[in-house]
Image 1 (cartoon, one colour):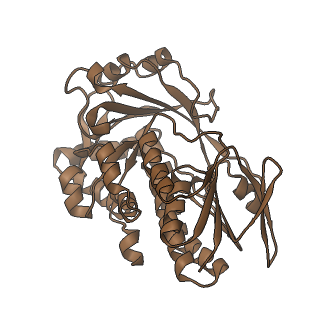
Image 2 (cartoon, helix red, strand yellow):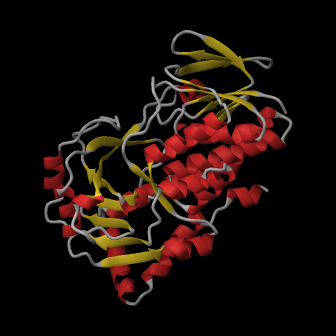
Image 3 (cartoon, helix red, strand yellow):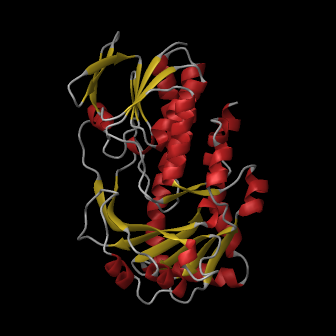
Length: 398
């Protein structure tokens, strides 16, 4: 089936979609609003469900080479360090799920995907943002911010939470501020006391905030994300500098693994977390949405990138296997709606638990603490994560 596909957005989801389409034989071009490619200096977690797709796209080995395999996912009390649960990762996760769990620098993953696209000679046009589209039964016309228009067979909106494609499809609606902000930073591991940061996905939970740390680039860097309940900061930019002194003050009294990491941190970024209600429509005849454009994820299950990566594979599969484009897009939507909605809502619930917001959340943590003493909390946590991590869309569709 020969089709000309235009992708709006050259982020992780857009580049994965470009690779997935190209491997299915489609003609594809990516148009990016920014004048240059690149990702902010921050880490992300690639659970096995995402790694299966990256393997199918031919980039999993490069990801493993550039990344870090954590031994466990551990949730602990912000002050005492008491463990609420430990979920084994590392070799045990590889044996259980058939592929690795990897931490990677966003910029490294983005560069790997860009190089894979360039190897296939896929065009990526920079400084050309998609503004909207018009379509009839015979024609799809895509409008760009510079006033130029282009005809294509399909348009994929992978242009993020502020998606212009989504706004054209469903009408302009504002994303909602969650009342939470995220601080992010990266520190060279050799600037920290040896052994301070455990080789895990480290999660510290406390009143009104939580803190995540993990290694990147084979252990050369330590990435952290610190989320705080706060209403006086609503800037969405990932590149907005934060005040490192303010960040250190915010986590005063936390466990030394947190405070010593922050003491060694020289700079950080700060941005507000915005969210949208789950959508029931992602497609419009020959136009479809992907990733944050249709299901933005709060970072409390570490699945934002993974869901966009899964989307790309599912979308390419149905376009390649169904003769009718509109029908293929509808099938893609139906296949993805329930899973992404559940994870989107699950991430929201975790925000409340991690920040000990309600008496019920505090009671849940107390129960986890008690079960941890008896060695039972680990299996409960694993059972919650298994439906996410064990999901292998490549195997399901082939």
